[in-house]
Image (cartoon, rainbow, N blue to C red; front, side, top):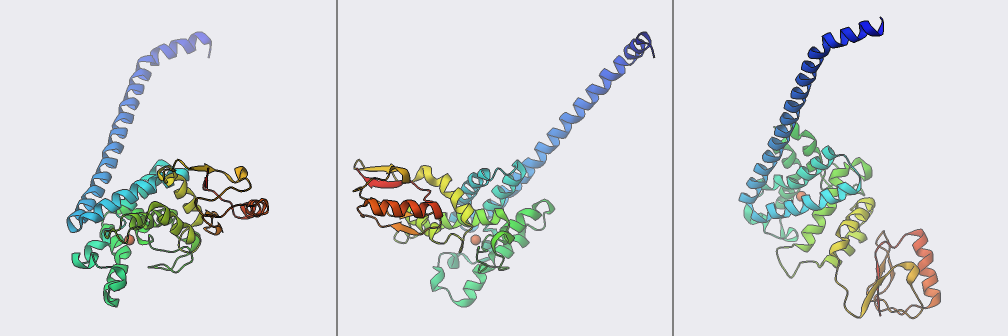
Length: 291
Ligand SMILES: [Fe+2]
């Protein structure tokens, strides 16, 4: 075909080409609208479930919202895609939906004071939660995350005794965020953990109850809320440790091992040992020393 013939054909088809482009753009727009509408329905359905939880027990709803927000922050550090983060966000919001099967007065009873059959009912809630939402096909993956949110990294959790990476990542994340919130927001103020105590607990049980990699990311997200230093304290890194410094807080490794006690005055030899331990099991938090 000569260039002249080609130009004639192009001009003949120009109108049809522009029309088809418009049709495609309109269809694309409609498709996007449908996707947004679908996402909105999923979110509104999840909110309905949260409302049911709140009607049963107001604190269940508040707890779920905090766990969901913390879980999303951790999930973002894994660089998961938007859809996976959304699944975790909704699963975290609904992780305790199965608790609506538990009578209200039992929800307020400390676990240690419960009879065996009451404990069994409480421990059923991950499976009950999955069952409740299983009627919605689109919530299938959310149900899987809910089912496993009490599985422990060492395989001693429930309901299936999964261990390590057999447990879905979303469930491992929710488990840590759930444990932290349960400690710092206990109903009884006398039983409530401080932020620092809760962090120590999480570190202590890293690789036992909790995925150590999730703990690292969780610590990174909650670090911004860690305690305010007093005027007589400063936060330093391992490389800034100097002889005769006095520790204002104990030093813990990434895996929760206590490396140096609060109040300890550091000698040169001691600093050398801390640095050697840091090579093996890193110290990821700031070290708080007296000025
Ligand atoms: Fe739970």
